[in-house]
Length: 510
Image (cartoon, rainbow, N blue to C red; front, side):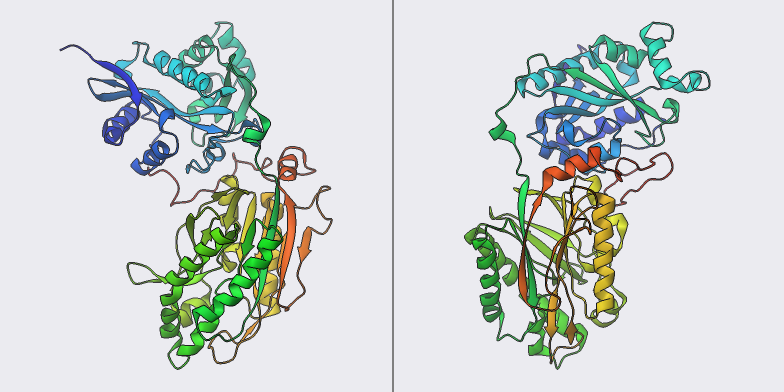
């Protein structure tokens, strides 16, 4: 039978043969791409996912994303460059084709299949007018020499043909050059001594793009609503107040409007004779209507709205605390409160969700954590790993001590993740609604602490316990400078060789 060799884009039906070939290529790794990860890659960047098939069966593959190279230091890790395996780092407007996977089934090596994939990547890089191709290369032969040679010395010996490293020799012969030795790039890669090489290939045909065509927005105006709890006659009455605030923020040309957690709680006054559990479930019946109205307001007033939160019944009957990002282009995204407080579980029977992700907007990449979630540093760090610039925290607190927990934790999240944090809560007293009698808030925009930011780490803050809006400008470009040149560099200084953080939901299945 004649062998039919084809290079093409990855398809859904390729998964079984793709997975089998990868397992044969890397039997020692023990970690392989789940089908949902490959599906997301195909959705994000279909032309970047290349396979070689032999009579229809995948025998080699090369997967890629596009990144903005300046956003990542030379000592980045694989987890960082892939956004903790979510590919949230993929940026169609970036300048670098970043290789995140390449393999050839051992049975088919020696047929120049890897060279075909590399050439296809170069052609793609040229066609998309990208500056470089980059990837973290394993140095699988280094373990045998790590007691006598540094990684740099090992690379030089390979270049001088004193040591045989087939993979590295192949990359060098294909015009890739080492830029840096990275420690802890790929956890568990013992064969490489826990090292990798950052390799790059320069596109000689690259030409500078028009700055106006790709320059991202760096000046962002945040609008925070410090909401007064008061009784309403229904959703229509409440949304007159909502629209008033949205209109006011839009008139100041705000890019975002942030509402507090469960700001529509006063609607439970109609069912105050019910138990707390029944009342909150009754409140969930308004959620679809509230989302519809917020979506309309976002488009009408040309502003991105973060809806705070609302109870929502899941398909399995559990009650979750969720919210929505309503973009001004009419699209929406859903986020969930992952940790519920003991009282929320006791009186409302709320359950924690499991959805955690960043969201791309026309004004930066954002993350949203509802109230108590901001007190868990792991969540914000996972979002920072996905490239978050601004963290929004809608909250609901009754006392100053409860508020202080949210406020101080939010300030810590800004420092440790080198991002802006905006917090917004509700104020005032609310009679005839169980478990929502009093509220305390002082909404604020918080910053990292360095020379380019306020010395207190507070960009602006509202008057405590007073209904108002807070409008604040933040500069995202300063964050990039902080991450590269700050007095301290929390994200870059992490010891990935000592500890690691991962999400069970987002990690590839093993």
